[in-house]
Image (cartoon, rainbow, N blue to C red; front, side):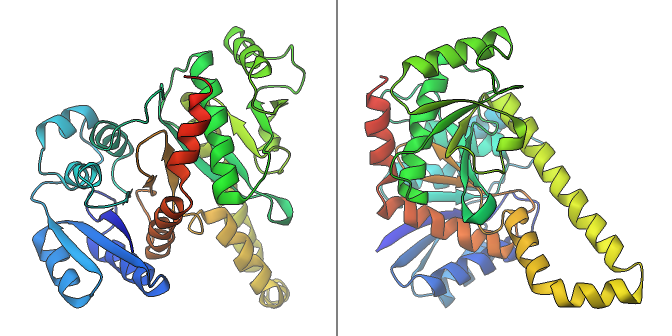
Length: 329
């Protein structure tokens, strides 16, 4: 059995929504056990109704508005803090949370612990592309300032993720930049390029913003500041496109009829853009798999995020990342 700890508190959604996702994950995976961390009124009844669920009762919550480091330090009984401690103690093999990004990063980094030799953990996710080809993108916000040697580690960690999760034998790596030419970019970007070119990481050159969803590279790396801006821009564009399509569909009866015929295709497109299919972003570089879901997560995303943690455990993602980072340690 693979046991995943799920923090059901601290997100923008009610704990009941997250518990629906946990229940769906249990139904989908007969070899999955869950340790649900949260308030007694939510987790105890849930554990009583599900054979493979155990309650981890906590009394504190870290909200989205709190300072992450201070809250993690002061609220020792917060659900995310206790969940990370449970993983470190061996009571669970991995962790899923849709709570505050800063709180999850802080609690997981200090609670679960970093792999020996890892300079900075990084947030990574698989972005959709044409013909089902996905691109691992990191860092998506864990580290605003990144030195070249840490970015090289990101490349190795991203390659390990692409191998384990996406099944790519020898992933190519691109550096997010403002042009494909190797002479393009800021002074720091040029340092990144030089470091990646010298590293044994199958570096294939600069990637432009248009490459994020094009499947041009298997892995695209950048610092957390640039990565988060790029990710939010992509999400905003996706929401705009979906809103425009909905507006066009409701403009006339003829458009509505056409939309009815296209409904299956449109539904598939919306699903790929929503991120629910991936569950969230994985925090690479820790001693156990940790997946961070979106604050306004859905039960479907929680289900897939929980299953993603279990899959990472079984695929020995942490061992792969450790082996990859040993090259640069």
